[in-house]
Image (cartoon, rainbow, N blue to C red; front, side, top):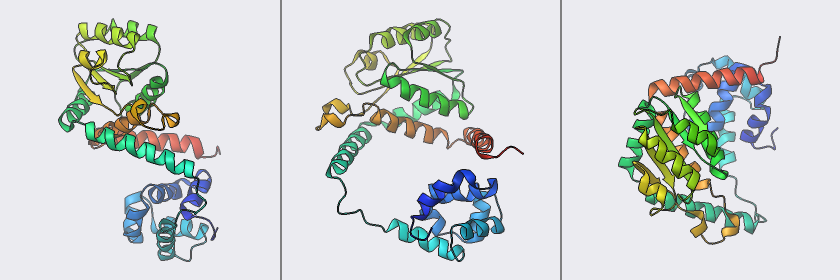
Length: 275
């Protein structure tokens, strides 16, 4: 194990760890810099486990003690990229950095917070997305359900029309469309608005029909307008916005508590061996 990156090793052995040790491992994988500043007592409290559990985990990783474990976290962070690293990989990275930077510059914070509040307090939220946007719609739906929010992912035009007909004034439609010009999404969204639902749009074109129709909208960088278009992942900017929205939602105690409960349930069912 000594020659292997300790975080990679933790991810590798994570499924086979006892439940209490998984709690510690998850903290280390997610926040290695934070772990470096903590004492063993502080980490035990943060992870909701015991000093003995942490000691067992670090021994499993061939570390002499908790201090040695923290030193290895530091050394892993200082690893330099190999000179032979693919130039193509660096090109793709620069492409993604441009998409992220230009999307961040487009975010209206006031609108963003209003959207988060609408999602948090709505009766139901219907997430519309066709094609590749449908994958993002499904991902967001699962996240919101796990926070205790009544979310319904609509990734087929017929289901969008049906759901639009039963919407009410306390419902929200979140429409995902890179171009904002997907006719089926726009028609269904307009029908839901007529029933009183609030329409939120996430799109890459400001003058698009969807943007103009929406009650609230966030603009992302349209990846078609970035050089090296062959690297396109049209959902990357939208996923970034979705991550921001869900992170803000998790600042609310009720949503965070429900998410923690579902993570605990899923983790136990997935990794605990039947007795």
